[in-house]
Length: 309
Image 1 (cartoon, rainbow, N blue to C red):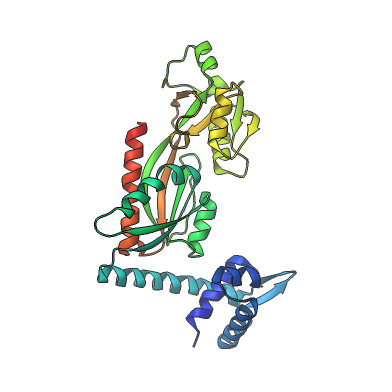
Image 2: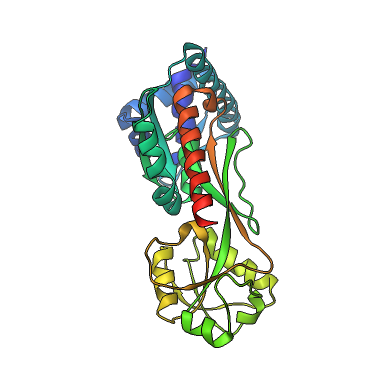
């Protein structure tokens, strides 16, 4: 008989690759993890892991067992959510991962609404993650909800077992220095052709970010490769540089800093949209406290979209 707890440890081992990292993620000791994995191999009657350098990799039998473990753990999570829904428990603690601009604009409103809800409080626990890291945290079951984004030019692949709650469609705007806008005769919110800025200096997120690839694709579709003169992780840095006349940038509306330096903002003739959505594990949305958290995020997103329209 295969032990569910040991299957969970093997599943974590497949994600982390080392005993130490697996032990840390499960709040166990390294020797305890090693002992459980050795016992699981005896139960399975075959080798599940093999050592390669300093990491452990799955054998074919190990990969097969992990694929079944994922189904079992997903079904268990769905069963737990269904039982919670049946009991009607609407309070609890929901762990949430969100990318920076969503963490800044959506989560605070949802947090306050859940804290002050007459139906009873739901406590949020937030960790700020870029989308790839948020999806990984949800896969590892370190969080119950992951708020992520996907560009219309750059769809994001997520596990098919995840459930998706669409929050809002966030338009991407061209941020132009006010002096450049005046020189080109651009009115505020005037639609622009991206190709008209092929000779401009460009400011972009760092290459590791999906926002960087979005800019490359948008400019490529307009027929040019942007000359990037500055890279930064924070859109507030990029817009401040735009205001200083350093160049132009593509910025999702939700990422614009409140009260930031003045820039001239323009929709694109070929619109680019950033879809913002919440991911949960199988059946998790039926858990009352997670369902209330998703509803609060959706309300915050509707308010943000109306405010920035």
